[in-house]
Image (cartoon, rainbow, N blue to C red; front, side, top):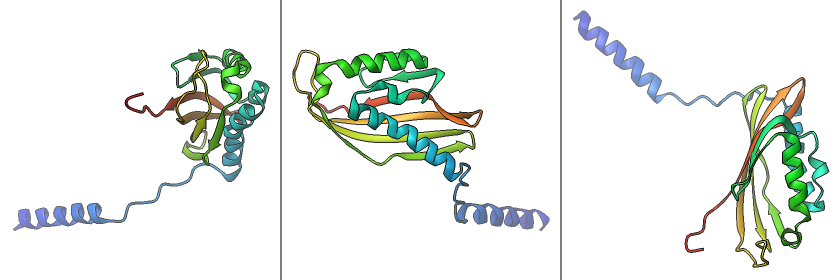
Length: 165
């Protein structure tokens, strides 16, 4: 009888736990933190709007890692900004038109966050001048807060792959 009661008791506990309402994750970042992160994410759009890499100064950690949709990888804030400055001077990117989706921010901890932003680009040309099909791009940033300031520790930019292209 004790064994039956024990099994029934454990069954009730398991069923109760499994059928309970999922708990909403706790927001661990402050509104001020989210505003700071969104400002950093928006710098990318502003930099592309003006073809000015200096807008991104201070956004990347000194040891940041960065990979673009074409597989180019750079490490370190200085190298990342230098590469972006060169890209901005290329004529094949000057005539493109980009539509920016709203950024999404997710706090992992109070000092670690992920920021996602998708965007669509028309008119981007290959280096030899051929127009590329619409690019559907996804940018994911891992940001950390150190000394009260948010910085990008890692950024990965990727495009949807359209079959047959």
